[in-house]
Image (tube, rainbow, N blue to C red; front, side, top):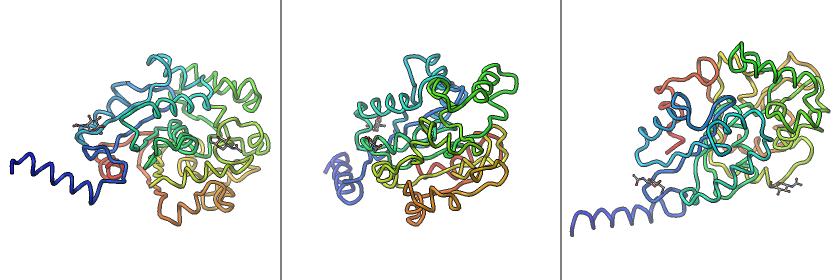
Length: 303
Ligand SMILES: *[C@@H]1O[C@H](CO)[C@@H](O)[C@H](O)[C@H]1NC(C)=O
Ligand SMILES: *[C@@H]1O[C@H](CO)[C@@H](O)[C@H](O)[C@H]1NC(C)=O
């Protein structure tokens, strides 16, 4: 038997034993979809471009799709501030459904706000199936402050703060400012629940959508990375799905102490019992990690 035929036979039986029925691509790799954070874009060679390249080096043959929201890198960056998040999520769902390379399933890795947006994709768009969701500094209970957004002297950050202070839950601000859609004001919990167009919806604050619950629970793993010296996200606990207790802005509660978990409105308690939630901590500021840390802690979820 020629070596190539032997190899083919081996991979066919390997397929029967191990791969068939799972969502692995024919060459054994699971595609990866990544979604960048605020102020960033799909293709910056210093951020998402570098992550894509690193993953391609570590996992030979992998297909990595770095999402571009809009028609150009410029639009992509701008949309990260100004495009209605629900529309961004629909845009991505369409794109993923049309990509033949993803039809057997994919892993997803979101950076900062891109992480909560990818969670919405998992909850709303089960086809193609997401396997592991890796949230890198995502804010699953939103933010109540952007202390160093993303640079201290940036005009856009001042403008964002002004909008949020003028009325984060007014229709005009909700519809036109991305960060307002995950603004979570614990002093105005009722307003947040009623008017937050994105976060309160995906966190089931108004109704429990059983579809959201079922879809999230079908993830293999939901990995959340928190940056211990994060100076951009307030409160940092949101990166592990914790937040301020409602009614004040000092005392924090963990995911496990919160109503969303205790009432299991989103299936997170069930996922926790099933060992599907992974909480990782990284030393350093927002999105700062080394390749060694990445390989040691996250790489195994991409295989
Ligand atoms: C592996 O499969 C994926 C998905 O079909 C494809 O994009 C990628 O190019 C393949 N890699 C190799 C080395 O054949
Ligand atoms: C629940 O979510 C699904 C998927 O996004 C949606 O089609 C449906 O309309 C939602 N149901 C309710 C009651 O919001």
